[in-house]
Image 1 (cartoon, rainbow, N blue to C red):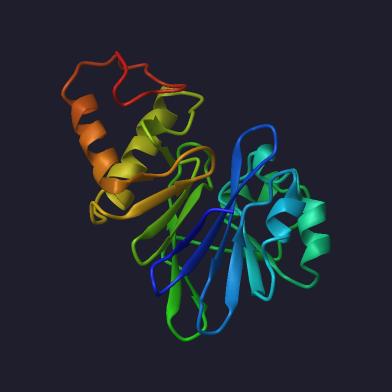
Image 2 (image 1 turned 90 degrees about the horizontal axis):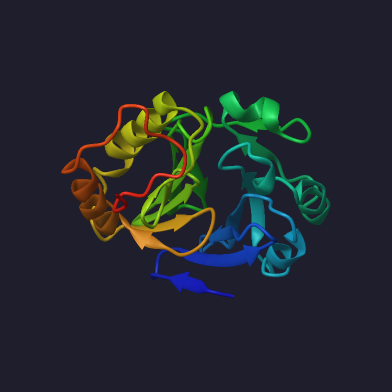
Length: 214
């Protein structure tokens, strides 16, 4: 499985299910403590990569069903491990999640690795991104080439605002690991948004928006 290791944090990325979902394991190498991000179908693929990791939690980036189709299997494979979700998406979970995470919360793995929760609404009301060092797990908030799909013009404006206020201040070399498909960087996203902002767009724009399209 694709493995990223920068000397401070270890990241396993696993592609899962018919919707091209990505699941992740973030591990603090010193302590062996880790978290799982999302629970798509084919959860067994992600669970097979856990190994000796001491899983401390499962973080759900948002409530859409394709990110929770493997809920039961993931729970069975990590007995006693709590699931965390933002309060605004808690009602979308297949079963009650034990914990709530809010903007600015910090989850510690061992004594060195810290995961910062960033509330980035728009794709869903409770969408979150997770930042550790120069690694950003963006859920469906930000993909290579555009934001996650939105269901109304005001929601597109909301997700764009989330990206600009919360994500664009990060360094250009911050790696972005989305909930589907390929990785990108904050620098690439910043340049694409600059191109988008340089062109006129209808006020009612929403749906699958490409920064470089049209």
